Image 1 (tube, rainbow, N blue to C red):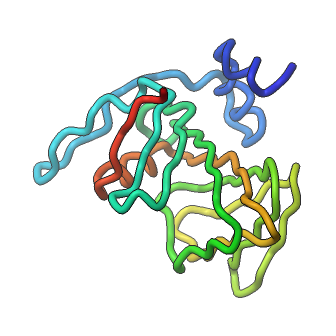
Image 2 (image 1 turned 180 degrees about the vertical axis):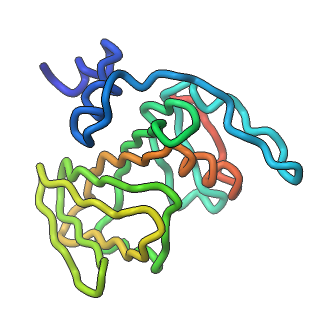
Length: 165
């Protein structure tokens, strides 16, 4: 079964759950919680769509978004140009990066770790990390955030939601 077939038949949540050890199919489409100071988020469960940064330099193809809560998850496909180095940052969610194509490294726990296609990098929530795309070509990544609230933070930071064409 190809990855495209898995997505078309709605099996992505089951596949990701198996990869990261979550039981069952995660398909609850709940609205994200809203604090008193924040506007409500749009429906993020109507996947797939693109999230595009305010300066248009970065975009994520959001493949699935399974609601809120500790058992939720979001899956995104990213194409990251060669030579890209992220600033040191943290995520409120655990982040898994499955390298589909190219070369990818990250600096975590005081050392650089290097990955080849077919390998998975894990960044625990609230851990400082720097991501780097090495090599001579763009790297393609499948990124999983658990819980899915990482997508919420991008939308709140001004990323635009665009339908796929």
